[in-house]
Length: 313
Image (cartoon, rainbow, N blue to C red):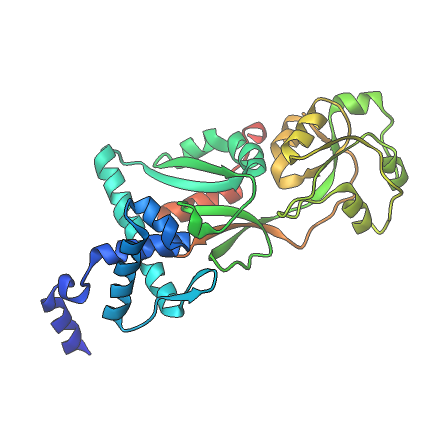
């Protein structure tokens, strides 16, 4: 084996890897899961991309994609090749960025939902600059999380069970959910002392989404009660709007503790009851396949997990 490895080194990479162009075009096809989108990104024809990938498969002596009736899918060999190429290209791109910008900072692209970026990240940005000055953060905010292969991100925050096929998940923190309101609303209303009192309060709610956001009926059922048909003071599509309505004194919202800890610490929101729900799901950071868990990425994960909001400090 050692003799074979030394022989390969003397051959040079050009002998071992016949076409760098084919590797680049294969990476684009695998990332987009589409020959058409890859060709559009690369500025060439779909036929040219297909030819390069076909030649790569012939050189390797194995199939990298399964050609299905509608679309394509990576084979196990294709997945292995895509993982190492993506990782290598990411490292090369990072070095190019540092050299071209002449800066010691490293930009990391963090994909989150609007709720996480606005309620968890923004209140802590001052602390990020003080704690990790070498990291330049770029937020890629999405309405909902999607397939990581279709996004040029270094890490992504997801809420769920931690089992996803497009990356490696690292636990951030668990969550608890409880009723909150503003001091102004509390001053105008009698504090609820029972679940029945909560039924008849000025309830604020957000639509359930694929992320698993809990609504008031679900929260009440988790307390062992099935409420009558609830009458809401306001319902919103986005959870961030629900929290804004609570801040303005319009009613009682469900507080996701990890998202609103800065508002509780500042006194802008108050917790109404000790009753709480601890979901089975949790928040995770997902590192896409092909990305390495670099020291900078691990440092950012630690910061996302442990950083105190400005109000708490």
